[in-house]
Length: 139
Image 1 (cartoon, rainbow, N blue to C red):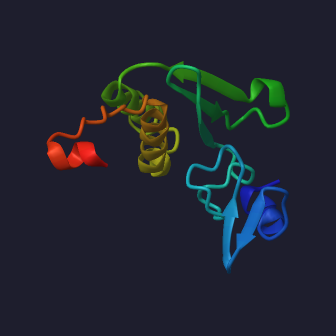
Image 2 (cartoon, helix red, strand yellow; image 1 turned 45 degrees about the vertical axis):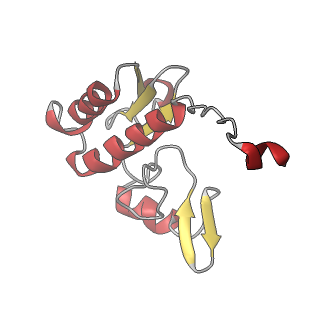
């Protein structure tokens, strides 16, 4: 089936659809912006990209266009565990620059990868300063 026909069928009724206060979102893994649109849908498009957190770094999963009848062979998964700049460059090269897989998804993929890397950073602990002076010791 064509991608447009699949989108026409699943646009308003699928298990990943989240409707809140007049806005529609999608919770599927291969939707980079979680918007219920044809451009970002991983179900309707033949070529889609999923970026998920790995134990260290980011896992980039690319759906191959010509392997729709063989679901096991249709996904190619790569773990990128580099620094933030190198990771964003690798993600951009995988999706748009080097392979020209889906150039329209480059900005969304880099944003998702950098958000995942930022969430994996450990939080800084600030020391609590001691109170100084006579009035501080009274309380």
